[in-house]
Amino acid sequence: MKEKIHPQTFQATITCACGYESEALSTRGKSLHVEICSHCHPFYTGKQRFVDTAGRIDRFRKKYAQTSK
Image (cartoon, rainbow, N blue to C red; front, side, top):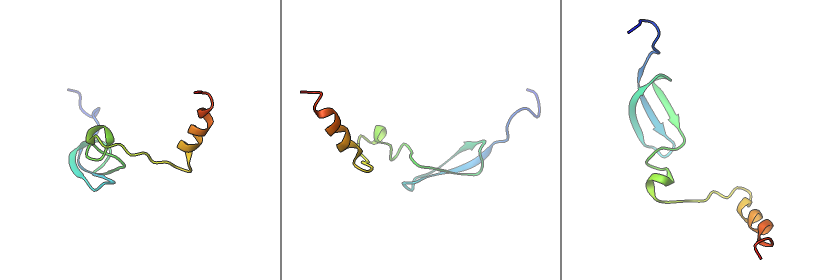
């Protein structure tokens, strides 16, 4: 293998917004913060939640309710 071409790796602690922490090798640094992980992602947990910001779902339903009739 050639020397001085590979990125430096760190033993990083990855912290999720839900509070879950894990350790992995990373080239980004020793501490990483993520918003979502496999312990809180709806695909892995089977739970789905809708975050309705400013009534967007309601506006969508009102807008397209007339076209479905």
